Image 1 (tube, helix red, strand yellow):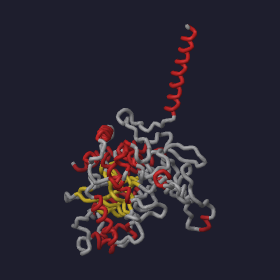
Image 2 (tube, one colour; image 1 turned 90 degrees about the horizontal axis):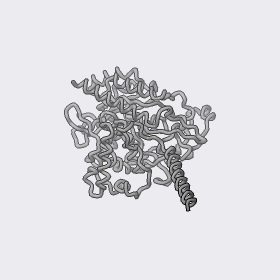
Image 3 (cartoon, rainbow, N blue to C red; image 1 turned 120 degrees about the horizontal axis):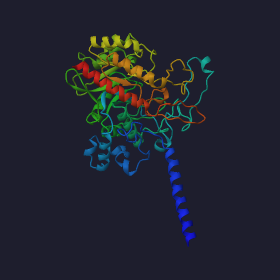
Image 4 (cartoon, rainbow, N blue to C red; image 1 turned 30 degrees about the horizontal axis):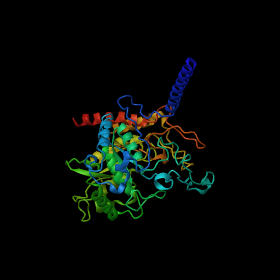
Length: 449
């Protein structure tokens, strides 16, 4: 009997040790996604699941989303709303003068039936002789994707509600108040993707839950002109303008108007833009229910006068490669700010953590900008602050093809060699953003005093 007890005891101890060892081993495989300490102890990633799970049921059916606050929706799990609100108290306040460009063109087999954009083709050089020296073809996800870094969320779908929620948590961890969604009109798309306007209602709902605002970054599409732009703005405002997450910026006159970034605005001449944006034109959008703040892309110095003639309300520079264009060259920002002040324009310089697109343009080494372990990003943020930016835009939250993302990336070993954020943790660029968002907020208060 004593021998049996000893044997039972040994068996029990062995079982306990086995459970302990298994727990430790599994824990070691869990990445540390929250390096903020106890203040930011909330996980930045929910469990990534397919639609139909109880905890994302309110978000899984895009067709059922209505433009009302989450806490007023009849079908919302009130306990979930309380949990979100409790989680928000662990994040810094959102800075609505920090905007991040956001892309919704990613897809995977689970949510979209195929990989979209992660399988980006390798683009040829325009010189056929140069192009002959580089590989062609497409990437093959999920291990081989069209990016030089690998996302912590994997080759995700932009339609996955859990991914969108994870993104909102990351935005809030970085104190980013506004995401500028890359937007094409319904039924239209970029050359490598699929239409994405139907994702906007879900983004608005989740953004509102996390007190993030949504602006629109209107992309160039075939046939874009002053008439189609009027229709685009009318559509956006009528469909999304009443949603509490829809971003409106306060003007000098005290109005709160939607803000629209217009990518490659220079493709349309200033006379055409003036028909839409000048008060004196009969076809003008000004002083109508569809009026807004329209921000032009400043690429070349000569575009400055065109922007004034066209009737735009501000400029942004987009590109994350310092020196790539006149507008993206940081030493020019002080003079651009002076130009904006002289012409009553908003100055919105764009900052980025670095640039590398050789995963899709294998010949484009000259535009690569090393992240220098975060120093490149900090220098850009400092330059924007010193130049007197009205708003700071970030290129980008998740443009993975061009390596400008501040979204979390992880080290990955596969046949493809990926860059990573080491020796820092995956959240490093959100931490840097949070720090400079606070500095920028204090500087703006000082300027207004």
